Image 1: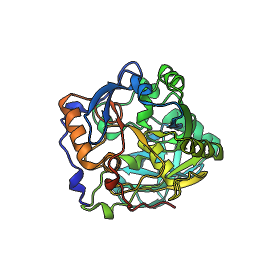
Image 2: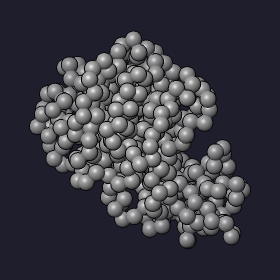
Image 3: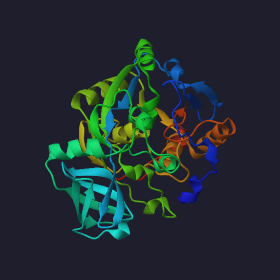
Image 4: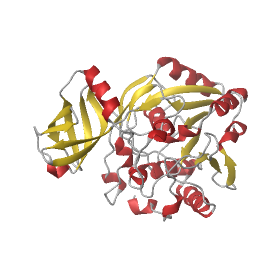
Amino acid sequence: MKVSDFDFNLPDERIALRPAEPRGAARMLVVRPGGKIEDSRIKALASYLRPGDAVVFNNTKVIPARLVGRRGAATIEVTLHRRIEPTKWRAFARPAKRLREWDIIDFNGLKAEVEEKGEDGEVTLRFDCSPVDFAEGLARKGVMPLPPYIASKRAPDARDDRDYQTLFARREGAVAAPTAGLHFSDEIMKSITDAGAKTHFITLHVGAGTFLPVKCEDTADHKMHREWGEISATIAEALNETRARGGRIVAVGTTSLRLLESATTPGGQIYPFSDETGIFITPGYKFRAVDLLVTNFHLPKSTLFMLVSAFSGSAAMKAAYAHAIAERYRFYSYGDTCLLYPGQAKERGEARKSVK
């Protein structure tokens, strides 16, 4: 498929630079392929659930992964995106052309050696300290890694330390938030359980690769960055029991969906998972685990817009996004959200996926 098939025009003023206040105030576009588009609110999500449904959240916690340092006279900015060892990370560096292997970058006392240079500004850094000192230094010197479409318009501030974390963030390791989860307040979580649905938590440490543009012309040539995820045996068993009883699995965010689909057999059984995944979902993919998806609005020509087009159908998503733009919905990480129903079965055949 051509990447250009997933393009659309988004007015710049539709990009949200702050989240709706308070949590739970965001709008929610309900998309039923073949049916009428519905304007709703995320606080009404429970009214779309059934007793016995399972709502699955990503409980990853964003770390202050953006660092600014010096290599000689040059200023270097890096965003950590994948942990290899406690003090060894893959990162995107800017400007990467200023760096050579074995260079030392000094992040105001937190020093790292460039062990390897990759493509598209990626480098491998080893920090010259203990894991404890690294964690403490990152907490002091790092800043919240806001997406480029926000960071290019304003600097991160103290509000982002709160706004860019979900209420259920527990496991440190993400360098981007699972943004659909940002909308959930204590009141909404209670409304879900009051409706007879269960809540479950899995972990996918979201990488900065989620913001990388797809630079190739054909989706078959795009390489996904890998991310680490975990689904416990207890959660896998509970979700399988949900399906066996006729309940639906509702993924909150594309991160939850991608991890669930990475850990599901062709027959639809979810298994315990603790590994990296590089799953890439495009139209034609046959979904095995997820029945409904809560997700924010995504960038043109992005892998995430390809994913939602696979889930609900390309025509349905193009119509939904056109409606959202016309009705002045707020887009991207701090924007509004959607509740997506699956597309027709004929649009959901087998497709390519790459997982370890």
